Length: 163
Image (cartoon, rainbow, N blue to C red; front, side, top):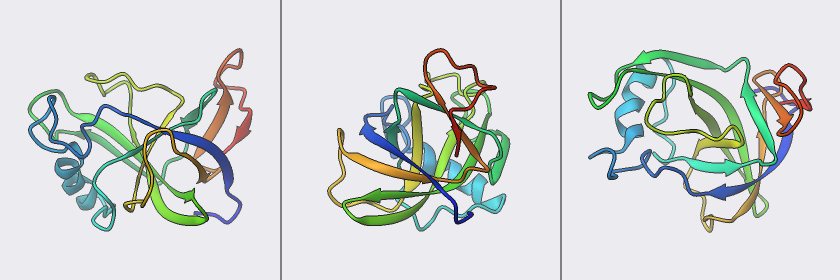
């Protein structure tokens, strides 16, 4: 990850609650199953908490443009068709501390079970003490990997600024 990061404020919100599982959707955590595929492709998530921080950057939205990792057609469950995933390193800043992490981006075109709001960034990181729903934090993102846009009236080809 490069030194010139873009800092974006966000709020932790409740997600679909399937990453850390088990849930009503899956009898297991989705990340527990998926991490083996990611590790085989060179991305080791072992050091991180196997769940996601769901960070709303509304009214902004984001687009993954050059991820560090792309995994195609990962058949991690027999409950639905294979999915595509992308990842980009990031940092989470909360209460004066910084935590290394990665953006976890299940591609919406292959993620048939859950609608993903384009203002929601999912982050895999260490367990962050004191964090909860409604918590404000800051994400430090790689401008080569992610673009941030205004939510209303700006097409994806017109970035508000690059992340």
